[in-house]
Image 1 (spheres, one colour):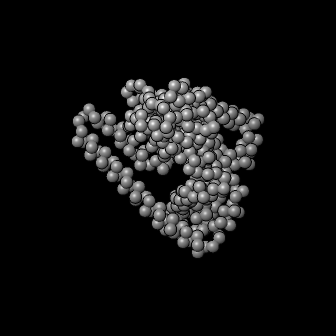
Image 2 (cartoon, helix red, strand yellow):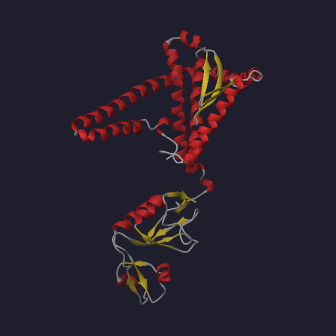
Image 3 (cartoon, rainbow, N blue to C red):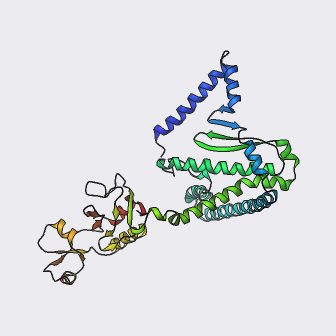
Length: 371
Protein backbone atom coordinates (compact mmCIF):
# COMPACT_ATOMS: atom_id res chain seq x y z
CA UNK A 1 0.00 0.00 0.00
CA UNK A 2 1.00 3.62 -0.50
CA UNK A 3 2.53 4.99 2.73
CA UNK A 4 0.29 7.55 4.42
CA UNK A 5 3.10 10.15 4.73
CA UNK A 6 3.59 10.04 0.96
CA UNK A 7 -0.13 10.60 0.33
CA UNK A 8 -0.25 13.44 2.85
CA UNK A 9 2.85 15.06 1.35
CA UNK A 10 1.50 14.89 -2.21
CA UNK A 11 -1.97 16.16 -1.33
CA UNK A 12 -0.60 18.82 1.01
CA UNK A 13 1.88 20.02 -1.58
CA UNK A 14 -0.75 20.35 -4.30
CA UNK A 15 -3.16 22.09 -1.93
CA UNK A 16 -0.45 24.58 -1.00
CA UNK A 17 0.39 25.25 -4.67
CA UNK A 18 -3.24 25.68 -5.68
CA UNK A 19 -4.00 27.86 -2.66
CA UNK A 20 -1.03 30.11 -3.38
CA UNK A 21 -2.04 30.35 -7.04
CA UNK A 22 -5.62 31.27 -6.11
CA UNK A 23 -4.55 33.89 -3.58
CA UNK A 24 -2.12 35.54 -5.97
CA UNK A 25 -4.67 35.64 -8.79
CA UNK A 26 -7.31 37.12 -6.49
CA UNK A 27 -5.01 39.80 -5.11
CA UNK A 28 -5.59 43.23 -6.64
CA UNK A 29 -1.99 44.29 -6.14
CA UNK A 30 -0.25 41.07 -7.20
CA UNK A 31 -2.56 39.64 -9.85
CA UNK A 32 -1.12 41.51 -12.84
CA UNK A 33 2.54 40.91 -11.97
CA UNK A 34 1.88 37.26 -11.09
CA UNK A 35 0.07 36.56 -14.35
CA UNK A 36 2.83 38.32 -16.29
CA UNK A 37 5.39 36.16 -14.51
CA UNK A 38 3.47 33.00 -15.41
CA UNK A 39 3.19 34.12 -19.03
CA UNK A 40 6.87 35.05 -19.25
CA UNK A 41 8.04 31.65 -18.05
CA UNK A 42 5.30 29.65 -19.80
CA UNK A 43 3.80 28.30 -16.59
CA UNK A 44 0.20 27.37 -15.89
CA UNK A 45 -1.31 26.02 -12.69
CA UNK A 46 -4.54 24.08 -12.22
CA UNK A 47 -5.69 21.53 -9.62
CA UNK A 48 -3.13 18.69 -9.49
CA UNK A 49 -1.62 19.88 -12.77
CA UNK A 50 1.46 22.03 -13.36
CA UNK A 51 2.58 22.81 -16.91
CA UNK A 52 5.63 24.52 -18.40
CA UNK A 53 5.91 25.44 -22.09
CA UNK A 54 8.79 27.08 -23.91
CA UNK A 55 9.93 28.02 -27.40
CA UNK A 56 13.61 27.61 -26.54
CA UNK A 57 13.85 24.32 -28.42
CA UNK A 58 11.94 25.39 -31.54
CA UNK A 59 15.08 25.94 -33.58
CA UNK A 60 16.37 22.48 -32.68
CA UNK A 61 13.04 20.89 -33.58
CA UNK A 62 13.05 22.65 -36.95
CA UNK A 63 16.61 21.48 -37.59
CA UNK A 64 15.55 17.90 -36.88
CA UNK A 65 12.41 18.21 -39.00
CA UNK A 66 14.33 19.47 -42.04
CA UNK A 67 17.18 16.95 -41.77
CA UNK A 68 17.26 14.54 -44.73
CA UNK A 69 13.62 14.84 -45.87
CA UNK A 70 13.61 11.55 -47.80
CA UNK A 71 14.88 9.60 -44.82
CA UNK A 72 12.35 11.22 -42.49
CA UNK A 73 9.56 10.50 -44.98
CA UNK A 74 10.51 6.82 -45.00
CA UNK A 75 11.05 6.79 -41.22
CA UNK A 76 7.64 8.20 -40.36
CA UNK A 77 5.91 6.15 -43.07
CA UNK A 78 7.23 3.00 -41.41
CA UNK A 79 6.05 4.42 -38.10
CA UNK A 80 2.59 4.99 -39.55
CA UNK A 81 2.36 1.37 -40.67
CA UNK A 82 3.60 0.19 -37.29
CA UNK A 83 1.08 2.37 -35.46
CA UNK A 84 -1.85 1.06 -37.50
CA UNK A 85 -0.79 -2.57 -37.08
CA UNK A 86 -0.17 -2.09 -33.35
CA UNK A 87 -3.56 -0.43 -32.90
CA UNK A 88 -5.48 -3.26 -34.55
CA UNK A 89 -3.31 -5.83 -32.79
CA UNK A 90 -4.08 -4.27 -29.41
CA UNK A 91 -7.81 -4.19 -30.14
CA UNK A 92 -7.77 -7.85 -31.18
CA UNK A 93 -5.76 -8.88 -28.11
CA UNK A 94 -7.98 -7.02 -25.67
CA UNK A 95 -11.14 -8.19 -27.44
CA UNK A 96 -10.00 -11.79 -27.29
CA UNK A 97 -9.22 -11.50 -23.59
CA UNK A 98 -12.59 -9.92 -22.87
CA UNK A 99 -14.42 -12.58 -24.90
CA UNK A 100 -12.65 -15.43 -23.12
CA UNK A 101 -13.35 -13.93 -19.71
CA UNK A 102 -17.02 -13.28 -20.45
CA UNK A 103 -17.40 -16.82 -21.78
CA UNK A 104 -16.01 -18.21 -18.54
CA UNK A 105 -18.35 -15.98 -16.54
CA UNK A 106 -21.42 -17.23 -18.40
CA UNK A 107 -20.50 -20.86 -17.81
CA UNK A 108 -19.84 -20.45 -14.08
CA UNK A 109 -22.22 -20.44 -11.15
CA UNK A 110 -23.70 -17.06 -10.11
CA UNK A 111 -21.69 -17.04 -6.88
CA UNK A 112 -18.44 -17.02 -8.82
CA UNK A 113 -19.42 -14.18 -11.13
CA UNK A 114 -18.31 -11.44 -8.74
CA UNK A 115 -14.85 -12.94 -8.59
CA UNK A 116 -14.85 -13.25 -12.35
CA UNK A 117 -15.69 -9.56 -12.76
CA UNK A 118 -12.56 -8.74 -10.79
CA UNK A 119 -10.63 -11.12 -13.03
CA UNK A 120 -11.81 -9.16 -16.08
CA UNK A 121 -10.15 -6.05 -14.72
CA UNK A 122 -6.97 -7.92 -13.82
CA UNK A 123 -6.76 -9.50 -17.27
CA UNK A 124 -7.05 -6.11 -18.91
CA UNK A 125 -4.34 -4.70 -16.66
CA UNK A 126 -2.08 -7.62 -17.52
CA UNK A 127 -2.61 -7.14 -21.23
CA UNK A 128 -1.86 -3.43 -21.09
CA UNK A 129 1.05 -3.78 -18.70
CA UNK A 130 3.18 -1.81 -21.14
CA UNK A 131 1.20 1.27 -20.20
CA UNK A 132 2.27 3.41 -17.27
CA UNK A 133 -1.35 3.41 -16.10
CA UNK A 134 -0.98 -0.24 -15.10
CA UNK A 135 1.75 0.61 -12.60
CA UNK A 136 0.59 2.27 -9.40
CA UNK A 137 3.34 3.46 -7.02
CA UNK A 138 2.99 1.82 -3.63
CA UNK A 139 0.49 -0.77 -4.94
CA UNK A 140 2.31 -2.87 -7.53
CA UNK A 141 5.47 -0.77 -7.66
CA UNK A 142 7.86 -0.46 -4.68
CA UNK A 143 8.33 3.05 -3.32
CA UNK A 144 12.10 2.55 -3.57
CA UNK A 145 11.77 2.29 -7.36
CA UNK A 146 9.92 5.59 -7.86
CA UNK A 147 12.99 7.49 -9.03
CA UNK A 148 13.62 5.02 -11.84
CA UNK A 149 9.92 4.78 -12.64
CA UNK A 150 9.29 8.51 -13.00
CA UNK A 151 12.57 9.02 -14.85
CA UNK A 152 11.58 6.33 -17.34
CA UNK A 153 8.13 7.92 -17.79
CA UNK A 154 9.64 11.36 -18.40
CA UNK A 155 12.25 10.10 -20.88
CA UNK A 156 9.64 8.04 -22.69
CA UNK A 157 7.28 11.02 -22.81
CA UNK A 158 9.95 13.34 -24.18
CA UNK A 159 10.95 10.87 -26.91
CA UNK A 160 7.26 10.37 -27.71
CA UNK A 161 6.60 14.08 -28.13
CA UNK A 162 9.82 14.65 -30.07
CA UNK A 163 8.44 12.17 -32.58
CA UNK A 164 5.20 14.15 -32.91
CA UNK A 165 7.05 17.45 -33.20
CA UNK A 166 9.58 16.37 -35.81
CA UNK A 167 6.90 14.61 -37.87
CA UNK A 168 4.70 17.73 -37.74
CA UNK A 169 7.52 19.95 -38.99
CA UNK A 170 8.26 17.39 -41.70
CA UNK A 171 4.62 17.70 -42.84
CA UNK A 172 4.77 21.53 -42.84
CA UNK A 173 2.70 21.98 -39.67
CA UNK A 174 3.68 24.99 -37.58
CA UNK A 175 5.42 24.08 -34.34
CA UNK A 176 4.61 26.44 -31.46
CA UNK A 177 6.58 24.94 -28.60
CA UNK A 178 7.53 22.08 -26.33
CA UNK A 179 6.63 21.59 -22.70
CA UNK A 180 6.70 19.39 -19.62
CA UNK A 181 3.93 18.84 -17.10
CA UNK A 182 3.28 17.09 -13.80
CA UNK A 183 -0.12 15.53 -13.16
CA UNK A 184 -0.44 14.61 -9.49
CA UNK A 185 2.89 12.74 -9.35
CA UNK A 186 3.26 11.60 -12.96
CA UNK A 187 5.58 13.63 -15.21
CA UNK A 188 5.00 13.98 -18.93
CA UNK A 189 5.74 16.05 -22.02
CA UNK A 190 3.78 17.65 -24.85
CA UNK A 191 4.19 19.65 -28.04
CA UNK A 192 2.02 22.56 -29.12
CA UNK A 193 1.08 22.37 -32.82
CA UNK A 194 -0.92 24.84 -34.87
CA UNK A 195 -4.31 23.12 -35.07
CA UNK A 196 -5.42 24.81 -38.29
CA UNK A 197 -2.38 23.54 -40.19
CA UNK A 198 -2.93 20.08 -38.76
CA UNK A 199 -6.51 20.01 -40.03
CA UNK A 200 -5.58 21.16 -43.53
CA UNK A 201 -3.11 18.39 -44.36
CA UNK A 202 -4.16 15.02 -45.77
CA UNK A 203 -5.25 12.09 -43.54
CA UNK A 204 -2.08 10.18 -44.42
CA UNK A 205 0.07 13.09 -43.28
CA UNK A 206 -1.95 13.31 -40.09
CA UNK A 207 -1.40 9.61 -39.47
CA UNK A 208 2.35 10.06 -39.84
CA UNK A 209 2.23 12.70 -37.13
CA UNK A 210 -0.12 10.81 -34.82
CA UNK A 211 1.80 7.53 -35.10
CA UNK A 212 5.23 9.13 -34.72
CA UNK A 213 5.02 9.14 -30.92
CA UNK A 214 4.30 5.46 -30.39
CA UNK A 215 6.78 4.61 -33.16
CA UNK A 216 9.54 6.46 -31.31
CA UNK A 217 8.56 4.72 -28.07
CA UNK A 218 8.82 1.36 -29.81
CA UNK A 219 12.27 2.21 -31.17
CA UNK A 220 13.30 3.42 -27.71
CA UNK A 221 12.10 0.14 -26.21
CA UNK A 222 14.03 -1.93 -28.76
CA UNK A 223 17.16 0.16 -28.22
CA UNK A 224 16.83 -0.18 -24.43
CA UNK A 225 16.41 -3.94 -24.74
CA UNK A 226 19.51 -4.16 -26.93
CA UNK A 227 21.53 -2.15 -24.42
CA UNK A 228 20.27 -4.37 -21.61
CA UNK A 229 21.11 -7.50 -23.60
CA UNK A 230 24.59 -6.21 -24.45
CA UNK A 231 25.25 -4.80 -20.99
CA UNK A 232 27.58 -7.66 -19.96
CA UNK A 233 29.73 -6.98 -23.04
CA UNK A 234 29.61 -3.21 -22.53
CA UNK A 235 30.59 -3.41 -18.86
CA UNK A 236 32.93 -6.37 -19.26
CA UNK A 237 36.07 -4.47 -18.17
CA UNK A 238 34.43 -3.47 -14.89
CA UNK A 239 33.10 -6.74 -13.49
CA UNK A 240 33.25 -10.51 -13.79
CA UNK A 241 30.59 -13.22 -13.67
CA UNK A 242 30.17 -16.85 -12.74
CA UNK A 243 31.76 -16.58 -9.29
CA UNK A 244 28.67 -16.49 -7.08
CA UNK A 245 25.44 -14.70 -6.24
CA UNK A 246 25.98 -11.17 -4.95
CA UNK A 247 23.65 -10.06 -2.16
CA UNK A 248 22.27 -6.62 -3.04
CA UNK A 249 19.57 -6.35 -0.37
CA UNK A 250 18.60 -8.20 2.82
CA UNK A 251 14.98 -7.92 3.94
CA UNK A 252 14.47 -6.92 7.56
CA UNK A 253 12.30 -9.98 8.24
CA UNK A 254 14.65 -12.34 6.44
CA UNK A 255 15.84 -15.39 8.41
CA UNK A 256 19.28 -14.64 6.99
CA UNK A 257 19.35 -11.21 8.64
CA UNK A 258 21.54 -10.93 11.73
CA UNK A 259 25.13 -10.71 12.95
CA UNK A 260 25.91 -14.22 11.69
CA UNK A 261 23.75 -13.91 8.57
CA UNK A 262 24.16 -12.40 5.14
CA UNK A 263 25.06 -8.79 4.43
CA UNK A 264 24.79 -6.56 1.39
CA UNK A 265 27.87 -7.18 -0.71
CA UNK A 266 28.34 -10.81 0.38
CA UNK A 267 29.10 -13.29 -2.36
CA UNK A 268 27.35 -16.64 -1.83
CA UNK A 269 29.40 -19.45 -3.35
CA UNK A 270 27.87 -22.62 -1.87
CA UNK A 271 24.67 -23.94 -0.34
CA UNK A 272 25.61 -27.21 1.35
CA UNK A 273 27.55 -29.11 -1.34
CA UNK A 274 25.75 -27.28 -4.16
CA UNK A 275 27.99 -24.69 -5.87
CA UNK A 276 26.44 -21.29 -6.57
CA UNK A 277 27.76 -19.39 -9.58
CA UNK A 278 24.80 -17.08 -10.23
CA UNK A 279 21.25 -16.26 -9.13
CA UNK A 280 19.81 -19.20 -11.06
CA UNK A 281 22.08 -21.57 -9.14
CA UNK A 282 20.90 -20.03 -5.85
CA UNK A 283 17.27 -20.77 -6.68
CA UNK A 284 18.07 -24.19 -8.11
CA UNK A 285 20.13 -25.24 -5.09
CA UNK A 286 17.42 -24.19 -2.64
CA UNK A 287 14.87 -26.13 -4.68
CA UNK A 288 17.00 -29.27 -4.60
CA UNK A 289 17.63 -28.92 -0.87
CA UNK A 290 13.92 -28.62 -0.14
CA UNK A 291 13.08 -31.70 -2.22
CA UNK A 292 15.84 -33.97 -0.96
CA UNK A 293 16.34 -35.34 2.54
CA UNK A 294 18.54 -33.54 5.05
CA UNK A 295 22.25 -34.13 4.49
CA UNK A 296 24.59 -34.98 7.34
CA UNK A 297 28.05 -33.88 8.37
CA UNK A 298 31.09 -35.96 9.15
CA UNK A 299 31.39 -35.81 12.95
CA UNK A 300 34.62 -36.48 14.84
CA UNK A 301 34.07 -35.24 18.41
CA UNK A 302 34.39 -31.55 17.66
CA UNK A 303 32.06 -28.63 18.45
CA UNK A 304 29.05 -28.69 16.14
CA UNK A 305 29.75 -25.40 14.34
CA UNK A 306 33.36 -26.34 13.63
CA UNK A 307 32.23 -29.72 12.32
CA UNK A 308 29.68 -28.17 9.97
CA UNK A 309 32.07 -25.45 8.77
CA UNK A 310 35.09 -27.68 8.28
CA UNK A 311 33.64 -30.96 7.07
CA UNK A 312 31.96 -31.89 3.85
CA UNK A 313 28.35 -32.96 3.65
CA UNK A 314 27.51 -36.64 3.66
CA UNK A 315 24.58 -39.00 3.30
CA UNK A 316 26.13 -42.23 4.58
CA UNK A 317 29.13 -43.19 6.74
CA UNK A 318 30.94 -44.29 3.60
CA UNK A 319 31.07 -40.67 2.46
CA UNK A 320 33.10 -39.85 5.58
CA UNK A 321 35.50 -42.81 5.17
CA UNK A 322 36.72 -41.54 1.84
CA UNK A 323 39.11 -39.14 3.57
CA UNK A 324 40.50 -41.92 5.81
CA UNK A 325 39.41 -40.00 8.90
CA UNK A 326 37.59 -41.88 11.68
CA UNK A 327 34.28 -40.03 11.63
CA UNK A 328 30.60 -40.71 11.23
CA UNK A 329 27.89 -39.13 9.12
CA UNK A 330 25.60 -37.34 11.57
CA UNK A 331 22.27 -35.96 10.33
CA UNK A 332 20.50 -33.21 12.29
CA UNK A 333 17.15 -34.31 13.72
CA UNK A 334 14.68 -31.88 12.13
CA UNK A 335 10.94 -32.12 11.63
CA UNK A 336 8.74 -31.52 8.59
CA UNK A 337 10.48 -29.68 5.76
CA UNK A 338 12.97 -27.88 7.98
CA UNK A 339 16.58 -28.04 6.83
CA UNK A 340 19.97 -27.13 8.22
CA UNK A 341 21.75 -25.30 5.40
CA UNK A 342 25.35 -24.18 5.37
CA UNK A 343 25.74 -21.00 3.33
CA UNK A 344 29.27 -20.08 2.30
CA UNK A 345 29.89 -16.39 1.69
CA UNK A 346 33.64 -15.77 2.07
CA UNK A 347 35.47 -14.06 3.65
CA UNK A 348 32.82 -14.27 6.40
CA UNK A 349 32.26 -17.40 8.45
CA UNK A 350 29.63 -19.77 7.14
CA UNK A 351 26.01 -18.94 7.88
CA UNK A 352 24.06 -21.82 9.41
CA UNK A 353 20.40 -21.54 8.51
CA UNK A 354 17.69 -23.67 10.12
CA UNK A 355 14.26 -23.46 8.51
CA UNK A 356 12.37 -24.13 5.30
CA UNK A 357 14.58 -23.51 2.23
CA UNK A 358 11.84 -21.60 0.45
CA UNK A 359 11.66 -19.08 3.30
CA UNK A 360 15.29 -18.28 2.65
CA UNK A 361 14.58 -17.94 -1.05
CA UNK A 362 11.53 -15.70 -0.79
CA UNK A 363 12.97 -13.31 1.78
CA UNK A 364 16.42 -13.16 0.24
CA UNK A 365 15.62 -12.55 -3.42
CA UNK A 366 17.74 -9.49 -4.16
CA UNK A 367 20.78 -10.94 -5.86
CA UNK A 368 22.97 -10.10 -8.79
CA UNK A 369 25.06 -12.48 -10.85
CA UNK A 370 28.04 -10.17 -11.01
CA UNK A 371 30.60 -8.86 -8.60
